[in-house]
Length: 140
Length: 229
Image 1 (cartoon, chains in turn yellow, purple):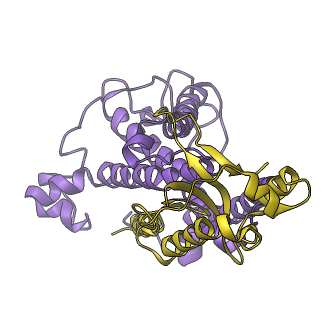
Image 2: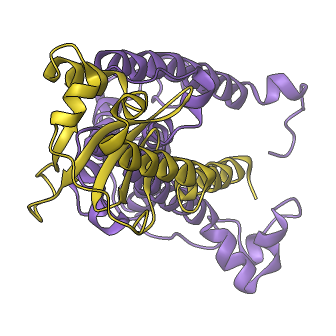
């Protein structure tokens, strides 16, 4: 095998490993746990749920709560918590994740201190792949 | 070739070593400029910035690298294949008009014309000589296909990272292979490679660079190819 072939094989294996890393990985479990925790906390302990928001989302929710993130979160139309936990495998790509849990879809982004919620209470109304989810809570 | 005195590893391999060094320097440049761009976008969106190490192990770095690699290897594979059958009169990149095709065993130093110092698989005969007769095209095509596959796998992850930031449904691999992002990355690389080959084939008819094997001798007439000399 030539040096260039070896290099290409190494790159292909590395890419395949990186690509598959989302499936059943600790990152996926961690993203699912954060989403689940947010879904559970938001109705009863909005202040604690606010700690799980990503900066742009925290900023917008605080704006909507007229200076109070918990007020903004309580005013948001988040779905009631349902039993059952995460539904299906979380989708992970690089530093973003999508988890469906407790009857809602939650988008997350990875920070140095773990996964944070980018958007929550999301529903998809169209099969059109160019149509974004409609979310009760999202960032600027 | 027989009779050529070896002059030490570096001198005898200077061209390959120079290009490998340039490859390395270019990858370093790509890594630093790429992470700066990634972090600019992350800062604007209020998201986490990443280290250079995380960037070079990311899908985004992989897809940007693989999309260029696949097109380079495709370029060489197509060039190697088409120059067997097609000529460009007067181009240093072409065989002489009239010599299209696989050529005789005598010209290819095979069969009764094989030399003592020919590569072992050229001397072996049978399937090994057949495989060896196409080994350059097989290798280039294989690397092209691997790189193109890597582009699809890494490109899907990088594209989905952006899609999920925009609260869009992530794509399956099949959906990504049918998506504009995959084909836009592919075709914009292919067109530039085909332009480069066409330019080289045509420019080398009329233009010269003294001392370069990629050029005809300065005084050679336009209609003659290097192979005529």
